[in-house]
Figure 1 (cartoon, rainbow, N blue to C red):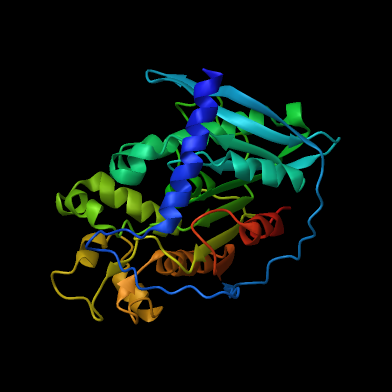
Figure 2: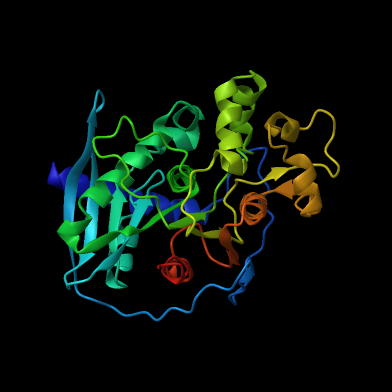
Length: 335
């Protein structure tokens, strides 16, 4: 069992390398983005992120801890934590299709207790079902477990940040914005998160694979999309601070769009109780003839600003993975 666990993580790391080496061949993808050799970061914020100082501390890890048991079996997570007295901030990381334990280790060395759920978003990253049929609610169970066991690791549950990118950004936001239903969790959420970090996400569900679901008229689809952009549905701490980030080299998650959109454009399938097309146009998201992760972040930033949420939105010249820039961003919003 242990050997297969480490083998799976090795395979995951190999797949990450392969993903970063190739762009999607999907007909909906735009793969013309060029990378430069010098870092370029552009940030639009309601206020500038706090300056961070990297301090490496001694850490340890507890692996394979069960946070939820249901009809599908045991769901597990790993805890990376400083061995000092604390109290330490608590950062809960939701994965995408592959292990992100490397991020837990890095964050713990910077002085937080990092709770990293094992990957359960594989199906959701490929098909809409996991997002639209309630699987995102499991994110609340991870947060609830982390808060219930915070004292075991000298962490402060009142200083909880929920973090995720790519396929993990949506469940992270689902929990961080108070949309997740924790009534089925073994450990419900004890206190609302005060931090949310979401990177490289399709809050608009723009990929072509989602079209059939939206075209079917399934109300769960629209309710999910509406949840991300309709602040009236959010249940958030008044102290919530949000960091959004995008990379300059999307790996096939862009989609062409007309300006203005044609009558039969895919974007009209994404109109909900909180219409998105007019806002995307006003934000200039359609100017380059495509929708990508950064456009998703622009729309989310706008909705958060309108709701009075402190939000930072950064674009980095990095790959589709956690990097020093992202770790610094996560640390900058710690209470």
